[in-house]
Amino acid sequence: MSSNATSFLIKRAKVEEDSLRDFIYPAKAGKIRPILKILLTNRCQGKCSYCANNRDTNCLRFSISPKNLSRYFMNLYSKKLVEGLFVSNALYRNADFSQEQILETLIILRKKMEYKGYLHAKILPGSDFALIRELFKYADRLSINLEFPTQKDLSLVSEKELYYDLMRRLKYLSRINENEKLKSGITTQFVVGATSATDREYLTMSFYLYRNLKLRRVYYSGFVPIRGTPLESLVPVSPLRIKRLYQADFLIREYGFLPSRLAYDAKGNLLLDKDVKEAFALKNKSLYPVNVNRASWEELIKVPGIGKNKASQILKLRKEGKITSFDKLEKLKIPAKAKPWICY
Image (spheres, rainbow, N blue to C red):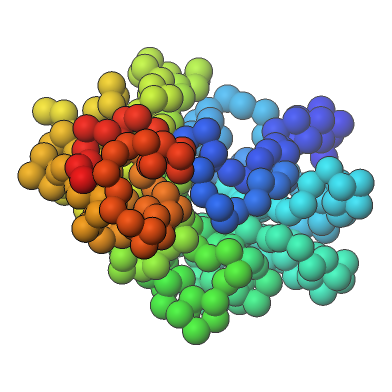
């Protein structure tokens, strides 16, 4: 590999926080940690219009072997610059060859270098199910990107098959994970803004993935146009839209909200000018006001400004006597925005 390509590879390898705290509600679980996120190669045969590495893009191409990547990672790890590795690959030669390279990297790290830390491996479209099964022996987390919530949208920008290919492999991951639990679970990612797919469609699919396939997380990547790709003239997605999607995702995943009950605009997208829970309350006024002296925990967490911990504190406070004013709730640091949605 040339020195220019090596420099480019290292530049492209991102040491990033494996967290999206800017876009989601704060959660107790989940440590923020630096992760090396890298491709073994960007020499891709795919024609995904939204991707900088598609086969028709005039970009600098690079490759690194599983052995060299393992050495490079362990060097960073020994210096405490990273705490884990997220390894993916382009579709080079064929899906199985590319998936085997990912597997080889994990085997080298686990068996030869005796690395015990965090490993996240990407499942590639079209890869053999036997290779996927083998990855369970070495990975803490596995993921396959669905990219879009419908085949219609996926077909506009890619040759991938949502249901026959991507979803089949995601369902296979879920089935194996029932008995061979991955420490950090299964995840997927959507690209938002490259097509007209709506927030309602994304969240409806996410709800299915959480409920039926038991995914640990769904990530939403805001589309950014890249020069030299077929979609370079599109407008980048608003960061606020991504923030709202993460808020809604959190309510669905952690609070049991139904995507069908959330508030959307005429196009099927979340309202940008309101917090998702507040917009939900405005849409579902029949559920409010919530009586803080009689409400269940499940009812309390639907109040804007009241989360899981605050709901539990209210239940504890009720044992001391009737709550008659917001003063007592204020001492629990419940924000004033909860006032319009509660009664005593």
